[in-house]
Length: 144
Image (cartoon, rainbow, N blue to C red; front, top):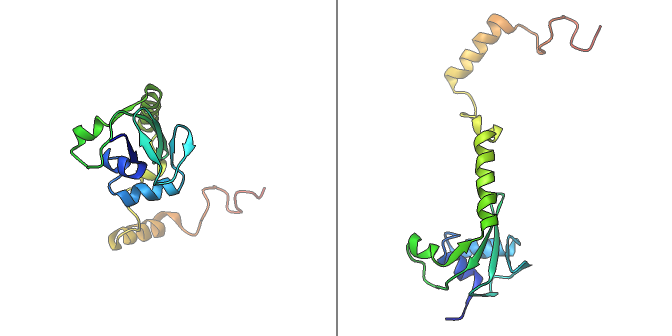
């Protein structure tokens, strides 16, 4: 086997769970071979450089093997080799996420439960009063 469709290869190399997901991502322009955006039927060959964007990160891999059968992960990892630049970029992104995580991820709950809502109402009745701003003066934050 000298050539293989890119959607089959991405599926076999375990970048995407299904071939249809791989096809969707290719159609959205998130996959490139040797710097050119491709269509799902484009054939990939040994030595090609494949760039794919997933979850805000770009991975660049060099094709080392071809397979149209999806096998276990250790076998799939032998189908490609990630470039050193791509590995460094992923490490930097992981470090950045560790240092400054996404603020929205700190939200543990959505709407308050019935108990939580009652606690909020009690706190508002006891201490907050009718004041909506954090300012101390009664006339509002912008009046002087």
